[in-house]
Length: 319
Image (tube, rainbow, N blue to C red; front, side, top):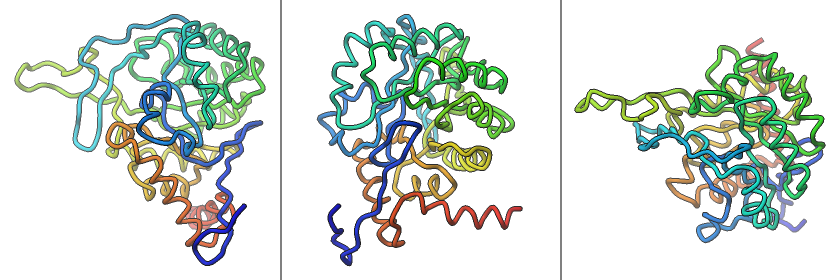
């Protein structure tokens, strides 16, 4: 490892272990905001990313919800995509060959309406064997069945995680919903089931009404709210999850700058995902990574893991 340009100090180790896997750095891009990677290849260096979390994959193809599916809100975005995707067989045939050649970790985001669907998709991708790992979506508020139904019941989270754990030794990440009373209970359930990490949060349930038409803007009535408006909620949820478990927490929600990402990391997250920010400026992930590097240099940190030392002091004060 070479020396940094600032004062001759070796750069901090930004690698993040997740189960048997390793991220080269803590900056990932969130499912549903980055397509399948190729869509952004001409806009940024994908090799700078710690991980790509793909658009959701289900057993069969899904056409998604009726349009319009996106609504801008103050400091946020409402979406009701409905997990539109081509299904796992087409994903393996058309997307995995490209994804498997990328210079960063790639985790498939897996969704379903039933336990058997989650197991089928995970098993099929494990049989193919070319991806780094899996993020299990138990938290999407934009479908009428599945996902959120599993993700709000700790017993079901633990049961499904345990069954998925038997399908693969690869990194298994459970994506948690914020639409619950205590996210720590769900994080503990995922850990008890054998998860290697939890990612939090998915979108908050939100709604917009068109005053002129006197009707909801989204045909689905409600959708998922993302963007800077939810960042304080995301940071608090990541903090509570990190207090509850010993496995890594991946923070998501409203990250537009390095300072935003550092809030999550200081609150106990080991890595972050950038979502809505990718729609605003594809250069945000690269700037976030450089900002984290600069923070580590300025603080004299040898490893990103040292960032949690400040949180330990908060917990003593809180307790």
